[in-house]
Image (cartoon, helix red, strand yellow):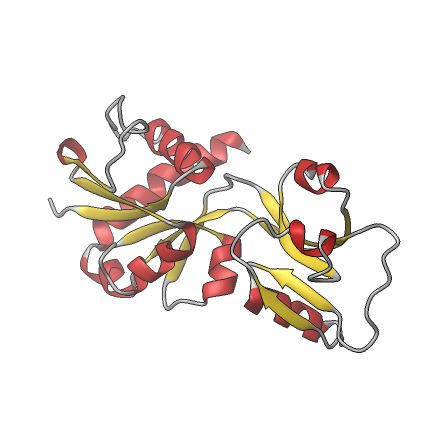
Length: 210
C-alpha cells in the first residue's frame, strides 16, 4: 500500500482535523497532538504528516511534497495554487470581514486597508468599485486602525472577541470560511484509490455531523 503524505497546519485546524480522521477510523497514536516534530510517521496507517504554517500547506501540495493537504478556504482564496479541492471538511468555521473603528471616516481618496490577505482584499474592494491601498501585515492586524496605519482591516473573525477587545466593529462580511481537503493533481491520478477511500470515510463522518 502506497504511503500518503498529508500537509496540515498547526493549531485549531490541526486539532479538529485529527479528531475527524480518528472518527473516520484512522488509528493515530495518542501522543500525536503533543508531538513537537514537523514530520510525523504513522506506519500502521501508511500515512505521513507534515506540519506547516497555514499559508504554506497549498504550496507543499502544489509541488507534490504532500499528496493531500488540509487548508482553510481563506488560504485557498489568497494563494490560488494549482491544486484540486476535494471536500469541505466543515471544521474551523469562521469568516473574512472588514472592520474598523466605530464612526471613523474613511479617507476619500484611497482608504488604506491592512490585511494578511492582500489578494482577497484587493479583489473584494475592486468588485465593490472601491479604490483602496492595501497594506500587507503578517500579524496583529487589529493594531493598524488603532495606530493610524490603516482606515480598515480585512481579517478572519471567529467569535468577534478580538475585534471587540480592541474597540473595532465589523462593517462588512466578505466570505464564509471552513477547512478543505486539497490534493495534488498528479497524486490524485497515481493514488486515486487510497485518496478516494479517505474522501469516502471522511464524508461519512461529516454527513453524520450535519
